[in-house]
Length: 124
Image (cartoon, rainbow, N blue to C red; front, side, top):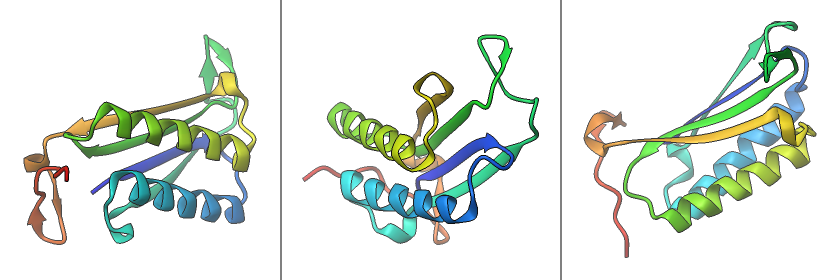
């Protein structure tokens, strides 16, 4: 059910880098959160040059947001965020002060996948 949205300025990520980022997001999420790879969705959105701002000043800012089921531990979320941050910086070269990554948790009962209402996160 995880849905990742990557937002960048138009032209800042070549297609091969997008594909690599999508692959890495999938590997990281499925490994850390212990979900099948085919549950991970990644969408890239671009905004026109001159439409991004940081601190009120025009900038090629980037964001990575993930909507996921609530119930994961703080440790899992911390590991996920740190691995995602390192991967995006490594592959996309986005400056530290121009990148924001966030997780938005929703109850499993508020999501469907494969035609089924999602189950709560289980911890072994």
